[in-house]
Amino acid sequence: MAEMVKSPLAGNVWSVLVEVGAKVEEDDELVVIEALKMENPVCATCAGTVKEIRVKKGDKVEEDAVLVVIE
Image (cartoon, rainbow, N blue to C red; front, side):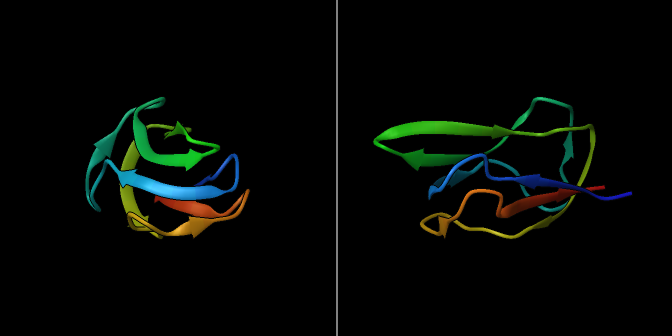
């Protein structure tokens, strides 16, 4: 079953720290969102394999936007 990792806040994608196919553990950092001049890491909500990355560096995202899909 796929797990959708969503943005906890609106901001800009500062960096993407994983690639499709990467194995991740729960709480591994996946993406960094910049908001209000602060870097906010977005972590994996479960262990698994990165199936899809829906953002790239520089993208603007809204709160609850899907960033990464983990299977």
